[in-house]
Image (cartoon, rainbow, N blue to C red; front, side):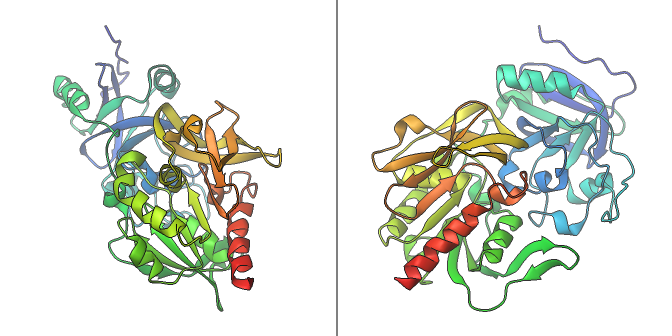
Length: 388
């Protein structure tokens, strides 16, 4: 029988796994219940960016680093307008923030944004369980009175269908197109604006992080963002010099039902194409490869990735539960990057064209600049095409 973590004080939150294991702790943030997949993230910083990253839709995040909430939150660090991750699990309850950029405490921010947190858990034990058994389905509940129907919570976790076959890009994409000109943050002025004529880029929003769009702007791109369901005709009508495929949540095979035909239509025009995370998987599917569900995925800011063409190792940020199956890459598609943790695919390119993508997040500054060359490579490809 699964064991339960016994509460050391009156619990106000409960995390119920589909196998019947129960974790009790201290609730913070919003009250109520949520059902999702449980993953863990090994990053030491960036919890606000993680909670607002659209790629975390349908997931509760366990933070392996114990000091979550210690720098508070601020509007500049949001990657989307609202938090997208379903909830958070931490070892120690969030403390009062101590950082000059903080404008609000994490707990009040979660309450206002409708997201549940649970503290006081043995996150090492939870992380080991995820690694050994795979990412479980869970129900997370927060009730200040401490009344929990644990049997009902376990039943809800078991009944949840999971991420396989689930298209979540439609839930997090923009409703209509918009222009983006905000560039990367710089001391002391903060975020700046790109000025002058730029390279015309259409970015497909499968759940795009704001900092990716900022990096495109900083690389000299005049960015127009289109919804995930945009057709090839709608993309090409904007006369782009390059097309960017963004990150996003869910099962790539499900999103590919409408994304793949669009990408294939764009590829026929021989435009430069650059993809990140889900965009990487979308490009691979459009080229004829397949994707697979990982045991527990890659989530963290310390993942070593080897560039097979230069031999260099980059320290990268990752957030994905699906991966491109490198064994299914067709002729003419080159594997460019691999994870040094497990050898999984982390990058591809078409052999004779400026079409490439990576699984990791070059905009997240884990190295901190190890992977920014990818944005510059994309811009250079567009400039070369313009010159020709």
